[in-house]
Length: 344
Ligand SMILES: *[C@@H]1O[C@H](CO)[C@@H](O)[C@H](O)[C@H]1NC(C)=O
Ligand SMILES: *[C@@H]1O[C@H](CO)[C@@H](O)[C@H](O)[C@H]1NC(C)=O
Ligand SMILES: *[C@@H]1O[C@H](CO)[C@@H](O)[C@H](O)[C@H]1NC(C)=O
Image (cartoon, rainbow, N blue to C red):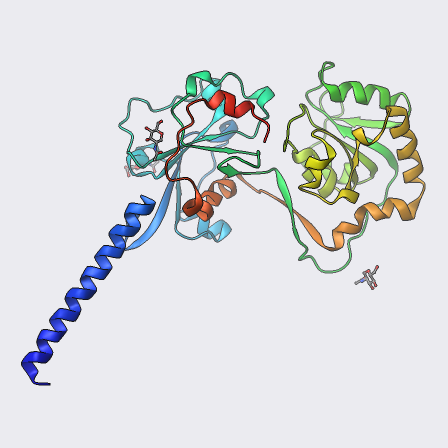
């Protein structure tokens, strides 16, 4: 090959290369709508309002530094609105007027607005005025675009066998918001007329500091993991934290047993609905507490699984980047109110 030909060939190669790179970059940009950061695509997620007014300070690369989620730019500086791929709005702050939707700002066409709530439909309020504004939902429901359950089981990584904490109290309950109209209050009232139930929390005038909760509950054979309202998938920290992390057996009141079994083994909990009456439930709990082998069998799953909880709001938000490519590219919730009330 003579020198001239060779140079032409090189120029040709360079041109092809430039074309391929720019084409794939723009193609990637087109399909994902992501902002480009030095050729690498990074999703920018703007937290418009922190849930329950907890303003956390974010690290410079929060998702990578704290949770090893790459290419995820989690920010809470509202002046980055026009650059954000995703903007998260927490329902409660919209509802109580602490924050407003930025309807006055020009909204980038590819930007997704996320409606975020971990409350059940009973406590989300009237959402009719939010129709046609949001693109994605982020809730505990399994069919939300971004589903964030209160906890989950993960394959066990802890070494050694699980040790069941020593027990001295039959049944315990922590309640701060007691309302006699709640189904759970009625069940509690009948139960406590039959067996001793130790109650903690504001309502009982026995508040527990955060660091007292687990050690206190761990001494109970059973924990009343009673939800404040009954909805599909609405299985909260009452089960994951108060009962499971404390090392006790949950007695659950919430969605039907089959729904719980989608999350946890069937022999890890007792369901109020398993019994024809509260009297039968009380008898069962008494018997189970005095039959060590049978009681211990409720902990068998712990040799295979650990309980995973979300540590922070950021951890949940960083999850969006992990599933970003699989989220629907075009979507509008025209009737958010109806959606928020549906049962998956
Ligand atoms: C928010 O971002 C703007 C624009 O990038 C910057 O000028 C400002 O200092 C930032 N504010 C904070 C609190 O980081
Ligand atoms: C764990 O439990 C199994 C079966 O119950 C037993 O064979 C094993 O020795 C235990 N391991 C430890 C580390 O205690
Ligand atoms: C997001 O929702 C807004 C408001 O309904 C809508 O105008 C926009 O087209 C939606 N964006 C996508 C990418 O679906």
